Length: 198
Image (cartoon, rainbow, N blue to C red; front, side):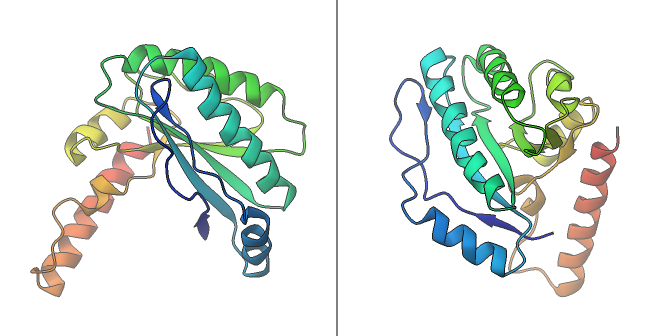
């Protein structure tokens, strides 16, 4: 299913987070997406510290724009990435889960989203979000973990599946032959799939 990246990048860090830059032409972009058969959208924010004001700003912005996307008939991927190198990663995840749950509870029955989250520090930490009736799917971003590490961590998260990009391209290079490239990619996909079916 095709997804469209709609954000315009990240604003400067404030309160330990980076919200998304303004998207003044979002409605036009979404209308074009609908006409071209796009299924959903992707937009990314970053959380670096466990700052409650910062986490609130990130999540509230993601859901505010997400509701506009839903209104157009598309499925938004809400992606508030917690930096895996944060010295406050686990605490930030705690704030994030609470704020996301609040926003999910406020959605109407005809509004549904996907979530794309960093693999949590505590196994199955996002289980309540995975089970929420307004959530279609929770997918994991690799966030800079090496693929083997990302796979091992993901395999312990029940109901969470991979949406890796950095880990997916690990080991691929322009200097490889077609056979080497295809073999490496196939092996990578197999390992990520195996980590996703727990």
